[in-house]
Amino acid sequence: MKRYINILLLIVFVSSTFMLESCFKKGPNDPFISFKTRKARMTGDWKIKDYLLETTTDYIDGEKDIYKFTGADDAVSETIGYENKDGVKDTTWTWKGKIVEGGVMQTERYFLFDKDGKVTYKFHYILSEFYEEKDEEALDPAIDSTLTIERKLYNTGTWNFMNGVDDYKKKERVTIVWEYVDFEQINNTKIIWRYEDEEENPTQEFNHSTRQQSRSYYYNGENTEVWILDKLKSKEIMMYRFLDNNYKENFEGAATVNTSLKGYEQYDLEQE
Image (cartoon, rainbow, N blue to C red; front, side):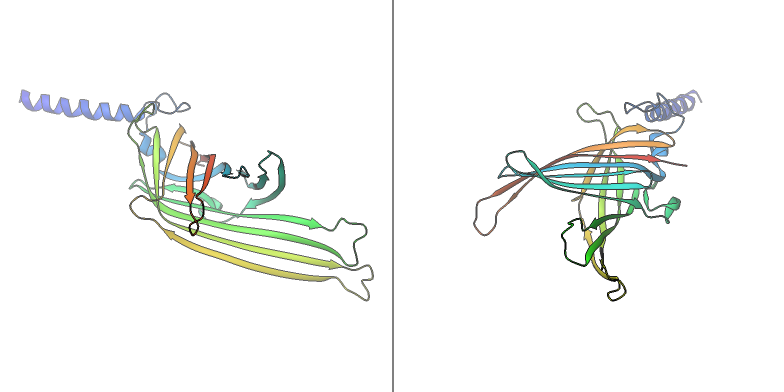
């Protein structure tokens, strides 16, 4: 009888140790201790509250492409810039827009981390920019145009915590392995011609639309992301990662082209 009691106590001790290890603070902004395991805190439907992506692409000739995308509450903004080999910035475009309403949690921006290790991601937003003819000597008619870019990103895959590696604690980081990625972009251009003599030449409106759709499949972990969990609470998650990719391309025997992309990406998630 004593033997069985000892075995039972050992099982309780091991189970308690595992539970406590999973409930203690891991990330810098985690609660010191939580009554929920890290898996229980991670699991669920998460609304993307804030999003940030900043990248710089360096080319072998010294030129750079600079990209920044931000999403805060219902607003989004995208900036694309260029810098020549002398460090002079040139040709910068900025579009602003909003998140599309509807879908899970009343908005089209969310992560779903399933307790069985499945993950679903959706981000649906619209950017737009208005252009107005400002040249006072411009010929009649005056031309206004509006460019609208609608993007839908829908990914599914698996997620899991990582063991401690280097300076990271066990379950301080999470891997997301995307199995397929759906992408759709719709470009709408509206052009309005306004004449001085509207009675003889009424205002004219022209619309043009293009659509791009793709689905990419990935096998054997080809598309894997590693995220650092800075904050993992019952109702809040802040996770980020650094981007550091190098590419080498060779076109029909020409010299090899080296391209480097570096950047930072961050999600702030919340639950109601």
